[in-house]
Length: 148
Image (tube, rainbow, N blue to C red; front, side, top):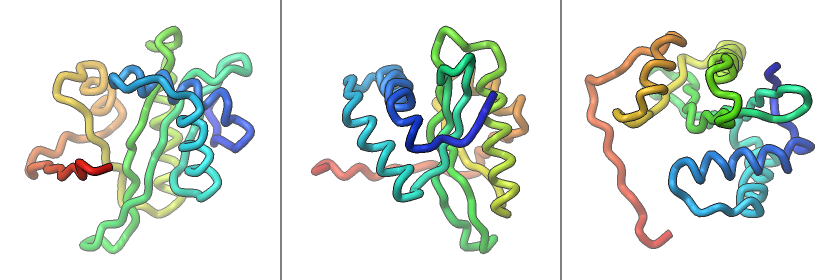
């Protein structure tokens, strides 16, 4: 089952979010994760959908709003997708992506963007299977503020 996250999900969601950050080689910090997610939910900075099994949160997807100037429409950035390792391979990622696509349609967005590493074999199979197309006509650049 998938559904939109609410502030009452914060404790379990923060634990999942912490697992996600550890997966990406960040230090565990559940309190900071809880604070970060509370701000996103309370300020409506992002949309978070959850995968649930027997009342336990097992995965989430978080999307941030962007805008396309040339299309003059909203885009959504699929920034975070995570399923607890004990529940992988059971369709939760696809269900979460479908929730994201429904939300994009209901908000009249022109699409969903995402980035994943070239070495992410699972993601690079999952996203095309869910209808995403690789877009290799541009170079992706990043500037990092070293003082934050």
